[in-house]
Image (cartoon, rainbow, N blue to C red; front, side):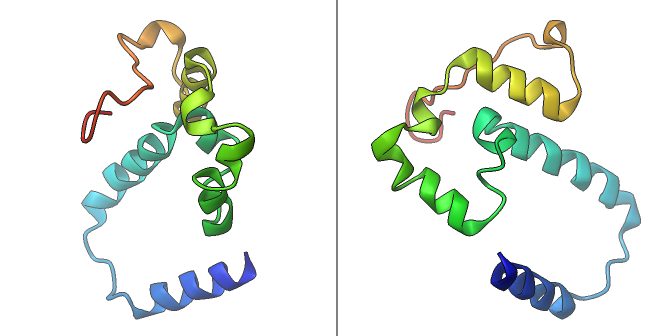
Length: 103
């Protein structure tokens, strides 16, 4: 985790100064929704580091495939909690991919 933090900080230092402040708010909101789209896996913090994320898609699958076997209610509950919505705000949720580029 420390190595990841150092690399992240180095990458940030190399970025040009941010001047588009009107885009910052929507980007922050988009980041929350992007993370929440992974439901329970993201809520459990399993994408908080590259190591944890790689385990989710490799070794963890042998024991319990969180990306495929977490139930819809758990994914929806985690999503709602992360984006601070109520269950009645959700019109439709589908947590299973039906094919490539069809989440």
